[in-house]
Length: 130
Picture 1 (tube, rainbow, N blue to C red):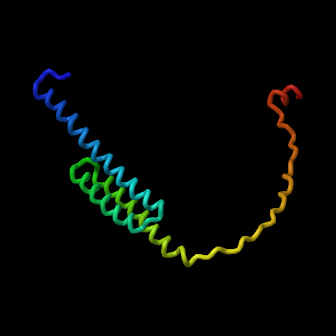
Picture 2: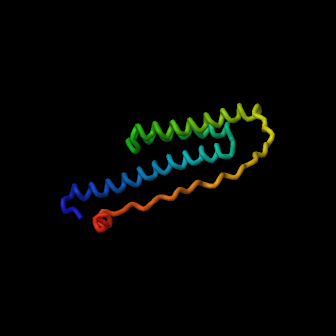
Picture 3: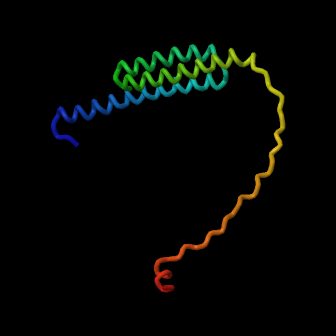
């Protein structure tokens, strides 16, 4: 424990700020999970709305230096990519038709050919033989 008054205050202030930062990081993770859940349930419109909210919260955390700018950009890019993939699936899904199932005949593999080799003679055995 620090002895100097200013150092004692620093410990208290740092603990308080750590708690605040923890809350904001948790909020960021929660928003990301909400968007992921909406994507999983195929709710495109709700996912778009939640995506905007998540972007706002991520940007806010980045502006407060709680998460790094590159980290924020990566999080936003991943979420946007998931929502874009969901849009693409909705557009493509009605057009794609199921192909008839064709059963394949699997032929048995031929037995592997085994070769017999003569064991190599060791140097010691070769010298004794001479």
